[in-house]
Amino acid sequence: MDGAAARIASTAAFEVFEFQATRIGCVAADILSKAGAGRVIAVFDGGFYVEFGAGLVFLSGVDLRNGPLNLATSAPGSTIWSATGARVDDRAVTSGECLIVGNRFRFTLGDASIWRPEHSFVVPNAREVSRGLYSFREAATGRLPREGLGCFVQYPTGEAASGGIVERARPCVRALRDWLVGAFRDKETAHPEDVVGLIGLGPGLTPSGDDLIGGAMIAAHALGEGAVASRFWDMVRPQWDATGEISRAHLRAASDGIGHEEIHRVIRAMLTGRTGEFGSLIEGIDDIGHSSGWDAIAGVTLTLDAWLLSRPSP
Image 1 (cartoon, rainbow, N blue to C red):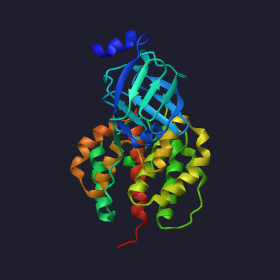
Image 2 (cartoon, rainbow, N blue to C red):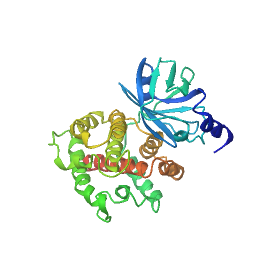
Image 3 (cartoon, one colour):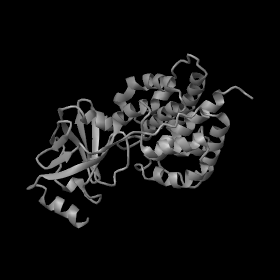
Image 4 (tube, rainbow, N blue to C red):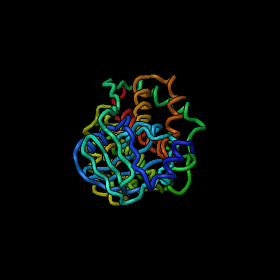
């Protein structure tokens, strides 16, 4: 812990700390633009979540990556927020220009930049998408985590993978791929019951199955298939009580095509043939949660595979 972070931790009970918001995700910005009250629902070493009526916001320091719910502040990146005095159920109040949390923190919002994913508006080309997928899988060889559902990046139907949640996910992933192929062909395909088995599958704040679903919806939007993403959302939304509040907030953002910046960068590179970027992009995926980045990319590759399968044969 550096000196500034140590002072925050040691004096949190006695001072109000004022920080400047530097970057705000587009979903969080919309939530904070409205005056209202909320409360802290979870505190971690790396930051904390505040719940408002319109959704969740995650606050942290200067090093926080861009994401739809994220609010990066001028607080030192080494700050251990669980030691600052922030507590679950602390009251939060926003005026649109300022956010006050408990009796310890004041965040000025006015000068922050708003992050939203860059949309390339490129009409996808099957040849480029196929080449992008192949190149990404080559670049990802040996990089996939043992935990989670990242194995589906290399093995689209999980045929060469084993393990607890992988075996439980396999029929769900196959059903989802088949449904997506039909949906991309504009068929009114019945919703397969197996697909909802992904909701809440795996441990953590954002279970692997949820992250895979989120990646799939983001990829569908990137392909210009927002209607398919909406149909998919309609399928899983009634089942989301099977997962937690934080994961539901990320799924809601994904249903609008918005996720972590690194996910969008990988998708753009796949769709536009910028295969030389994959090495550095994979490092960013590694840094999203324990396995969440790769779980989401599994949903991306699944969706791109289904889109290619739905194309008419040349």
